[in-house]
Image (tube, rainbow, N blue to C red; front, side):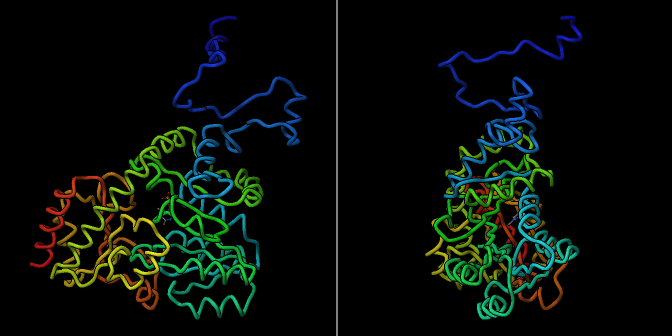
Amino acid sequence: MKKPTRVNHPPPVELPPGNRALVPPIYQSVKFEFESVAATEEFLRGERPGFFYTRSGNPTNRELEQLLAQLQDREDCLVTASGAGAISQALIALTRSGDHILSFIEGYGPTRQLIRRVLARFGVTHTLLSIEDTAGIERVLATQPVRLVHFESPTNPVTRIADIEALTRAARAAGALTVMDNTFAGFHQHGEYDVDVFVHSLTKYASGAGDVLGGAVIARGELIRALRADFSVLGGTLDPHAAFLILRGLKTYFVRYRAQCASALAIAQLLAAHPAVARVHYPGLPTHPQHALAARQMRDFGTIVSFDLAGGDGACRRFADALELFALTPSLGSGESLIVTPHIMGARDLNAAEQKISGITAGTVRLSVGLEDLDDLVEDVTRALAAAGS
Ligand SMILES: *Cc1c(COP(=O)(O)O)cnc(C)c1O
């Protein structure tokens, strides 16, 4: 073999039987081959397991899929290049022209825009209600066929809690699928409820480091099998290197999530006792209007603390600018603490009536509490509150 040939066919190293890597390797390969045309044919006919092309399947991605399915108490999973990709591919694969989607105003902006702007172009209609509008939910389910109900809990950014039991029961009775964006609560929560499809952004708590994008769709095996063929042609596949980083992040998922929840509760309590703060939205506080429901549904109340500053827009700007440890940037779930001012930085597609339902005011602040020392975070928030109030 001449050297230009050799560099394209390096000598393979295979581990001998009985010898394995403790951390599985990254299969950073787009292509996989079988030993013959006949074997390839068998694979393509579905008569033999294996991998062929990473857009349709990759061993590193598969490892992540199997782990996430177990964490969320479901049979199977598909990972995607981002959380938005998981949601868009799932909703595209699950709907057809003429179908109706029920979803909610209090939620992640890009998902709302997907339903309103993109799916509407393909004849998929929708109703957007408040997650608290129980009568409206029953009315919509009773008056027309609904293909699926898409919801979040806690909602972004003001942490309203969906009554998952009631919602999934009503949807099931009406023959509608439920799709729950469970990013805020995490993989270890809500699995015991009768939710058909969970979607997650892996960019947040799974990676935990804020250095990689990813998404996941988790459901019973038969549903994932049906979605897999569509996902393969839609093409928003996760890169195996990203899957490796997310698998690495997941090793510390539980300790991170719980430590961040404990700090989030302490900060929520501090905010609730401060005169510059009009209202705190944190499901773990007994003053949250749905605390009892949250306590029934959740083991950990999350790392997002939203609140309204009494001084409105001006106070909100002063508070955000005065913080030193909280980065002024979107996203959540990373080791660094983050701050978003939703009125200024998001939810631009909401009209005045929807804005009111969304619970976002000119003084609303959303904090994502990170892994810094709690004393340092308390000091930073206390100083910024003084700046906001002045
Ligand atoms: C971030 C987020 C998404 C989108 O995830 P990306 O990985 O950023 O595409 C979807 N839903 C919720 C609730 C999110 O917080």
